[in-house]
Figure 1 (cartoon, rainbow, N blue to C red):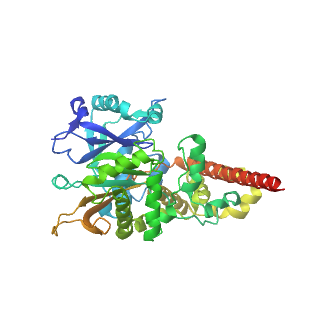
Figure 2: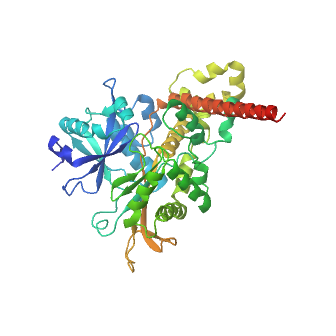
Figure 3: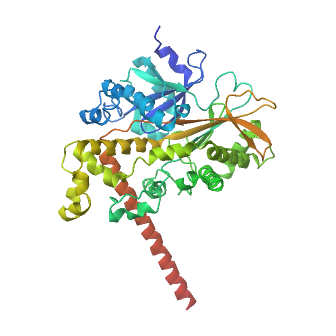
Length: 453
């Protein structure tokens, strides 16, 4: 018998967090089929009736883009297409061990409306103002709760999990990067984006996190990256204890970690990490860093990210050829600049253009996904565990661990123009910030010189 979620079921689902396009709920009820699961709900803009991810067929050009994957093209439902994208595209690339494509479950409109009412007070105000639960959907995505070990194990030993958004782990070197964007070859996208986010009020403090540290393969640099994320988590670092969040922002990011927050987190670790006060947090961050290093999962993620080998400055030209529209970028540059650099991109076959854009969008998913790592202390002498394990010297403990990639969303083809415009904006605000800092330094030096004279 097929399960349909009704209004009476809404009270069993609790708010876990959200991104730009989806809400995540955890299960707090007693139905066996849902225990150990999380639910992903699609969102719709507050102003306007059209869904953010409208459950309609892919566009003509998207069907052309994904023509090699029949299941994705054949479905008339965009939600299902997203799930099939994870199953057929991202899972083989990242490894089926680390990817859960989930299953769709039917949901009534009354269920979705009731969930919306139940969770609205827990959502960040900025998220509430922008979007709501999409009550026009007829199904939701059910996935394993990767912040827990399967039921029956986490009840014996506590489980602590960390969710990390590692972001893009390499610097682009494409010959198609415009001279005005040359800074992209030496400063990471994440670091540059901080300037724009500060300007827009999305963050209150510049993060010291550098994705190149996280993807370096060096244990020391990975440890530095984890410490930097802990110091300024924003929406890139969250920690869960037995499935309940104990650190980081819910949906709108978190400010820098102050003394009070550190103290509460240190206390929460008592049931998992052995050690005296002030030492447990350090041990936990070391545990995360060593697991990232030993597991090698970021090597696979980096390979997928590097499918974007032309950068948006190159891929945007292939996009305009696919949609059979005049290239707005070339038009803005003018004929002379276009002929010198970008004519070759407009001279390739349609199949070559499709591969460039498809690889770019797959890479965009890999740059924006999250890594969920779950730990539980291993009992003395327990050698029968099916999970990998790691010895943490600072606390003299063995831990089982498991790793999963989450938030592997299918990116829409029409987003290409938005990606290009955002990229320009990010570079502009970063350059502006650097220029301001240089002026301030120059003024300070001039004043110091005058004072000395």
